[in-house]
Image (tube, rainbow, N blue to C red; front, top):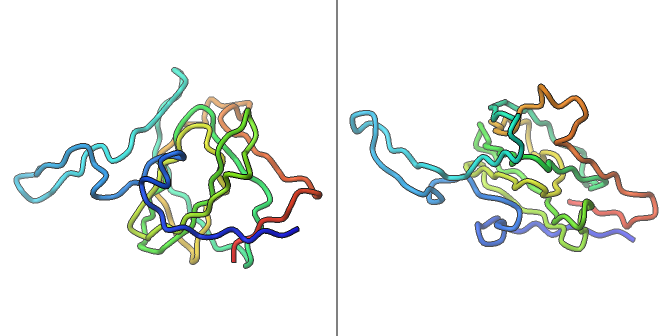
Length: 171
């Protein structure tokens, strides 16, 4: 059985179970800095590190489009930290998420969000998601937990679907 995943327009209300939206208007505070030449939109999303030995890092991920239709055949999650993605180019992109159900993704909660190119997201710890989905080659600023001391991949869980599971696609 095949299931085509509907693309939802992202909003803070719909995305809240999975994390935060990174965008102007989501800030906790805003004020003028740099002698009036810059407006700071402060604390648009937290960086959550659930272990004491970790440190937050900033990386750049370069993603390329997948062949269509996109088969959602596995999900990943990070149990020890949030993971934030902010597009560098202003190109719309997609996010696929699912809730955690005792260490496995709850496929009945699977959702696909269409994200505007000027909006980023931050996954909460323990949120299952498909890797970056882009419409065109695109770079992202990524804020997450350093994996330098993560010898056993303790902050990465992957679940590959079984052949007898239903096939899930995005057009």
